[in-house]
Image 1 (cartoon, rainbow, N blue to C red):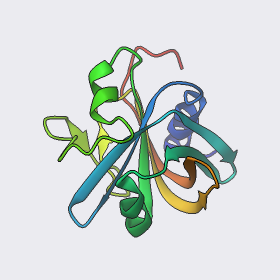
Image 2 (cartoon, rainbow, N blue to C red):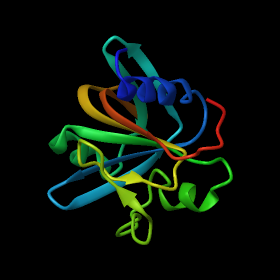
Image 3 (cartoon, rainbow, N blue to C red):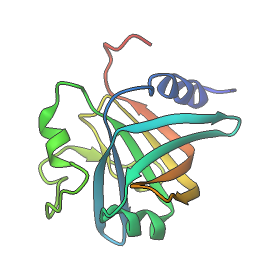
Image 4 (cartoon, rainbow, N blue to C red):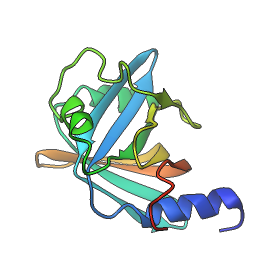
Length: 150
């Protein structure tokens, strides 16, 4: 770890255990997001995160084609966000009326999340189970909750 960006990323990764996350992706004007209940740092050199996403969601081809995704940590009290992005929701645009931005990859980052990690896919594991794993190299991070103990 050398500069302020790496320090911010390390602080964000330290906050990841537990919680509800939204995995997001965008490709050729299409955006998608889905709730994931398992996301965690899986390597610090290089910086990698892992997200377990339920199979069968429309986000799969968008991540595959874009080769990028973002992970946004939800506030535990934010029931609306959890409902908007439930894993099998087919809502036309769940991002409608939400403040979003992009960092490096172009994946939508939800500004009302507590933190966001922007990633490039380095591995995808299609497990013989109800979930698949996305391993992403961390490109950038943003912390939105100034009152969180870091």
